[in-house]
Amino acid sequence: MRKILKNKKGCSRQYFEIAKLKIPKSKRSFDMPFSWIFAIIAGSIIIFIAIYATTRFINVAQKAENSESALELLNYLNPVVNGVMSSYATKFNFNKETRVYFNCSESSSQSPIFGRQTLAFSQISGFLKKWPKPGEAVPRYNKYIFAENMLQGKDFYIFSKPFYTGFRVDDIITISSSKYCLIAPPNVIEEEFQRLGLGNINVTPTITLCPKNTIKVCFGADFAGCNMSVYGECNSFDCESEFDNGYVLKKSKRLYYTGNLLYGAIFSSPEIYECNTKRIGKKVNELATIYNEKIDIVKLKDCDSIISPFLLQIATISKNLKSSLEIKELYQLSKDMDEENCDSNCRVYSSEKC
Image (cartoon, rainbow, N blue to C red; front, side, top):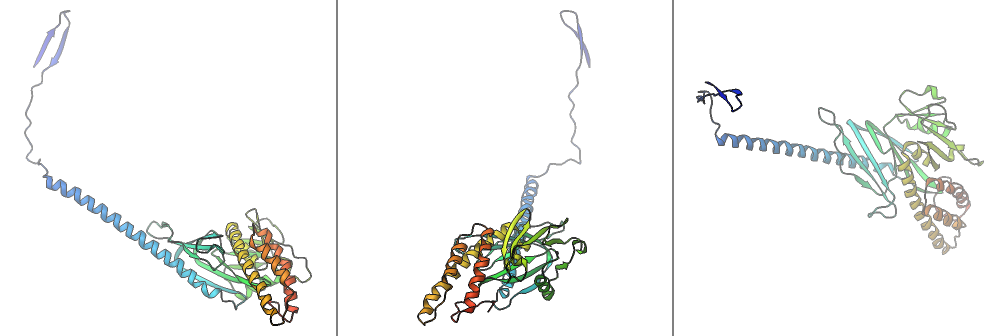
């Protein structure tokens, strides 16, 4: 119905008056009962809780499995530190891609003197190949493991050499997952790796012969393409090679070594190397102190030794190492002490030289 109204000014306006219509309900429409709504909401909550609980269970199970893997590898290392073999090499395999995380502390509440190391594992899982959080970090207080901060792969290579400062200190254990190419190393190192047959080490005379995708370690020079370089500083006539002591230039940092610490410097990150070097220094200090006390005991049996000054110097240097730079001072001291100990009829310790 249309009406035309005029206001006082004579202006007109139009409007439509629309009748209110009653729209009948469709026969197909229905009211959803409250019980149905409640059931849908409750079911959704139950499904959410089930998914959450399942996810949590899987994560906990993965974490437990990763922690067990870390413990398994650490237990696998026990035969490595045997005090008998001069060197040891083996291979550890996982059935799927694995990451191993290493950490090192110079001291800990459980071992304030010798510090500790921890290993944590994570294995790739799921359709999307995601990396879950690492399992619980498993600590060890009596091992010196040299490795990168994080290793990834299925095959892990373990290599061990004893470390001496005259007397035997402990084993230098290296773990790696990458392939390495050593360019022109000294004969003693080349023969060692050839004898052990470690699967991830290639030795070549020139860098051009290195296989692709290998970490290139150059001895005595810094060629183009080298990932790290080893420089020897041993000029003594009784050196097996100039690389008996020196430093490894790695990631723009100098990692100083003496003896078999060379292998630790090659296969570990600078942070792990420096930390373990200080830990080893603390053990050297303790052993030097014990051997010095042993001299007083053997004197009671009319057996004297003149290596006490050497032991005191070694203990002083090694007690508070601030960096690997200081450990090279032990090289000449330990060699001189070793000669005196071997020449004596009253040897204080067993040496690899006599």
